[in-house]
Length: 142
Length: 239
Image 1 (cartoon, helix red, strand yellow):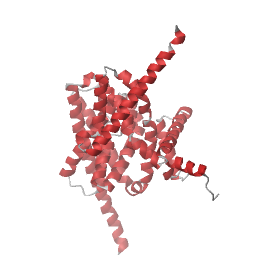
Image 2 (cartoon, chains in turn blue, purple; image 1 turned 90 degrees about the vertical axis):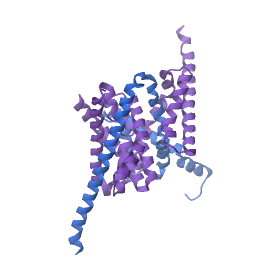
Image 3 (cartoon, rainbow over the protein chains, first blue to last red; image 1 turned 30 degrees about the vertical axis):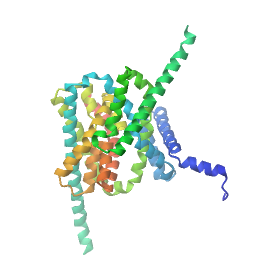
Image 4 (cartoon, each protein chain N blue to C red; image 1 turned 45 degrees about the vertical axis):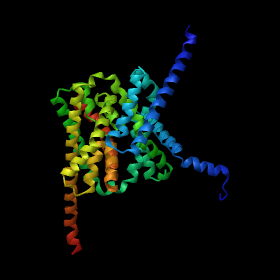
């Protein structure tokens, strides 16, 4: 069909809008939730939805450009979705004071450890693999 | 008279949803604009948005029950946000194909360090019970972290608080570590931010370099996934 009706272009605008695409992503989430309930999968519905979308993208049944903008919208404004959960501190008065300081201590020190270990491990493995690949490649090159 | 009961209750609930949703979205939008104008770490929307909304809730003498009653629908949107993580994974498939063994080892090492040091340090300062469990998944992205917290017997809401604290602190700590360690690969520089400080770390990594940002974004999602998939195992171990 080569001729474009106003309806076609309107439909295209809707399909490319971030809000519509975010709704599509929401649909996949509902499908994931439904699958978890019906099949009794011991995983969160969101994770099953993620796997579903990844599978559809990998087999090219869904094109990236038909969901990318919606996904970016949801990911860019994720802070808005968990702010209400963060305000639970209002109900936890025990966190104000010494316990709060202790928690801060745990978080700071643990984060230093996580970053140090991660960076060290990745750097070491990366260099080891690079050397390894080099040693194997050498005889072939000669 | 039971027949007239639902109508004032409904009006009340609708008003609550309208008021608190508007407050939340309005302050979030304002905090984002503020940060775009003055990008300082202490003006991060991660810090400013909850502080402002908390102040309003307290100033209006409202309770958290009131507030959460009006904004629970926003938390529900973390579900679609989790699904949306499929797109960055797909778009970084080249990175996964090339470096998956290194990234996998880094993620396992980082996650184990996060869990073990949180547990050990919490025990050291005398934190135990549900509070200690809520601290364990704090280095992964919020939707994943809240899921893991629920699985292992922590309090998901508190974990969300700790995730935010980790994000704010992590961006600064990452800079300090980068200055101390001489890391030859962009892979290590990105992984440090993505595994250590999830979304906030990824934003910082994007400022350092495009490769660092891509690596951080990818490992942030993957490490969240790995943690959720391993949560039942962890729960069994903790029981």
